[in-house]
Length: 119
Image (cartoon, rainbow, N blue to C red; front, side, top):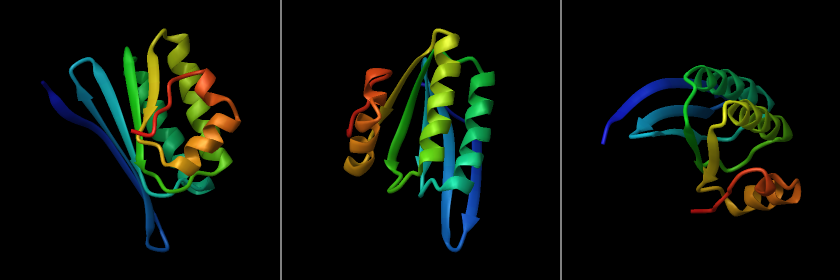
């Protein structure tokens, strides 16, 4: 199993930081996001997800297990990313989401677009 780090971006603000690490495991591109995703961090997330889209992956799993909070702008960036993947016929799922974010994602029916699991 190949495990290569492709991209890494960080943002710091007042001691909190959002970090994105992207790794390819076999045929799956795994995006691990950590830290709170506020409006400013969402722009960094958009930039990192744009880089992933250019790689034209077939399968993407986003791990949000280390994201305690996410604003609407972060959710919007994930939705735009999903639409880009979908237009390339790539699969997308979110794993390891905190319960509070899971409930928000379900409330806006994102679970109808792609699989979302808390594990």
